[in-house]
Length: 130
Image 1: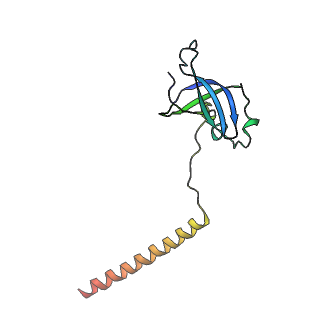
Image 2 (image 1 turned 90 degrees about the vertical axis):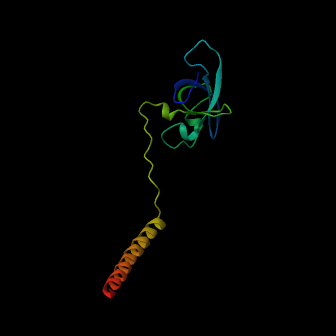
Image 3 (image 1 turned 120 degrees about the vertical axis):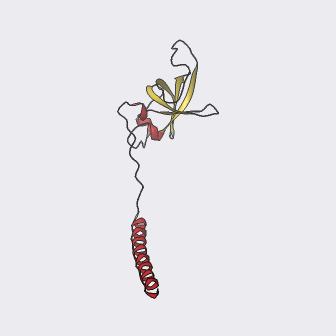
């Protein structure tokens, strides 16, 4: 039975700008079983590089190897061609930093430094009154 994480062969049955519909066997362990299910390989899951034109990468009736990413409760199947590649590794995600973030960090450091100085001065004054 088809399950998440499996890497199997499928056939592209339809191409759209947003992805490829790929027909995969419902029971990959039994090649004689004719039952198939169609899943979507989103354009972002076709190749490691940015895919501007999916029609330049894939063609209808083309055989592809796909990884089953998700099987939803409604029966929809999410597939990935790029993750089926044995050499594929997810790119490390780093938070995007903008100039506003840098300015915020600078202001926050300045505020923290000033507040520590004020707290230290208040502590010294409190101790000198004792």
